Image (tube, rainbow, N blue to C red; front, side, top):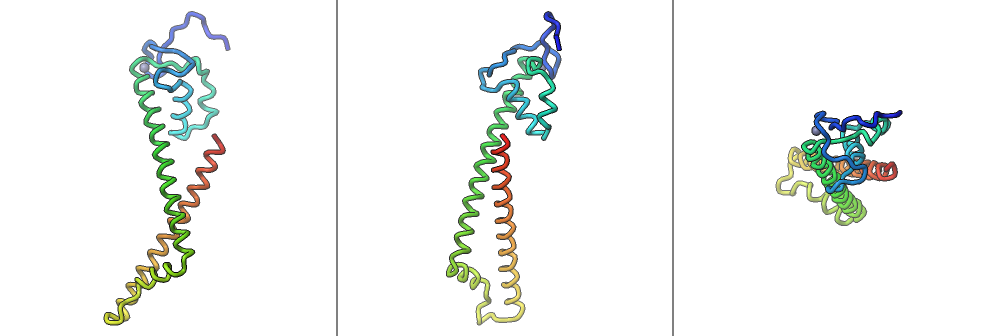
Length: 160
Ligand SMILES: [Zn+2]
């Protein structure tokens, strides 16, 4: 596709004159293609959609570039925080797995939910059992979630 030589360079967002057009990275470290990539990821837009637009035609005016750079900056921070949260959850998952393998402490934990003989009544005992069961269910949900997230993270990393 041949584009006119003397065509104007207008911002793709506001149609005002583009202030900066450089295929390489700008001073904030984000290029036009970085923005398209991050924005598409953010709105779950397929790569084939934005790759139909020639990158040389993606131009921003001064005002829109400030917003674009800020968006890219926030996105990078969000990705970093998401990764950090993932690490924390994996650490908790390892802790829980190790705790379950230690039968002594696992049994002590279970005993915590046995009613004291002094308070022994059918009702109290049943409440304790139900609390223990709910904690075990919560742990199970947590473990499943952490394992699924770890697999998703690995897949995302491989697809990059
Ligand atoms: Zn603009």
